[in-house]
Image (cartoon, rainbow, N blue to C red; front, side, top):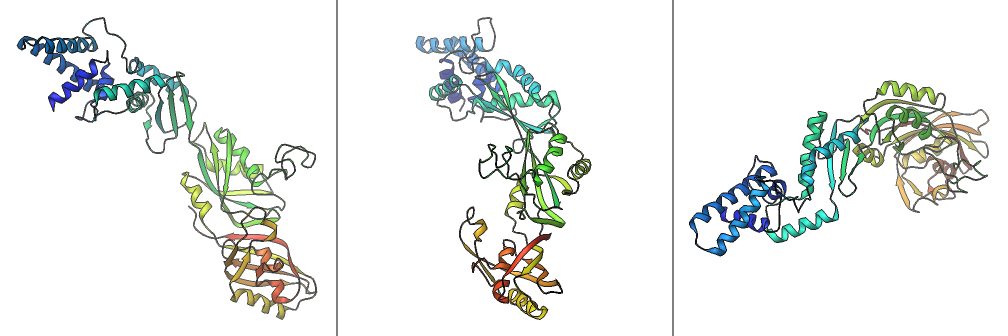
Length: 437
């Protein structure tokens, strides 16, 4: 094995002057407890000593010349004289580790974070040089230049800032762009979970671009680019951006209610994602008060807490059961007995729903089967033309169509069971059930 290492090292040195880091990288998978520059220096020292030993023992001129040449390169690389050329593989990059670490520290200035990661984008020349070296040496023990660069710069940044490198989920990734000579930051979003209540009708959950101009601005939307002047998202966003000093936010809701519906009870789960935040250590109790003051009378939030990015997928995929309060009007007079009988039909049968007409332009035209867990008549007006009904049902059931029938696309429906046209005029979501976080 020793002969094989020295042979490989000799072929590497014959390509030109090489620094300890790059030499050591070629043997990175051999031995432990050494850095690559220590490993590289040791290999070159061993090679130089072997050459000197062979010089005194061999009479083979060709072997002597080869080993003497290797010894000269080794001596130069070990800085035994002042004629050392710049490493042809990394072009002197590993002499600039402290400089790169300072660039990272400068780039991170102003950000609150606990963990970081270093990444490296090598120049085309460095990639080409490394490929030439691998081909010339034939070594199977090497590691890439960028791996060494990431580790060495990362170690120096850890020492300077007292922060920890995290290979899996760092708060910030600092990317060393070797060709440009600068550092790019990839700042992980901050995720805040909570529940919101919506106390007024006519507000969508998220910003709704104008149908006419697709958000560009026109007379139809009063040049705002939006169908509605505000949304739950936009009422929460300003205070989150102010607290985190982020560049923007993204709103993730556990489903959504209709624009004309209220969201009451314990509220609907949501996650607001603050993009590229400068601040991470924020007081969520204070943030909650500020949001509720800003959106007073329209939206209020509670239960704010930090979560990971994985929580977004959880609340998006969870099919929560819901409880609705419906105000229903009838095109004719309905008796209490007849209405209770019709409601009982809905409670005892699975509901077959084809995608409603009102959403068919944005959802696949499919037929789905949903279940009603409970349904009860809360109140019937004296004239028998309006009623309040509470429905607890499986997530994904369209309750407006459960009442209207949607021209036969929902079966059974209250309209079908009563034999009288029925319509939801007001809808409140009073409970979103399930464990989300």
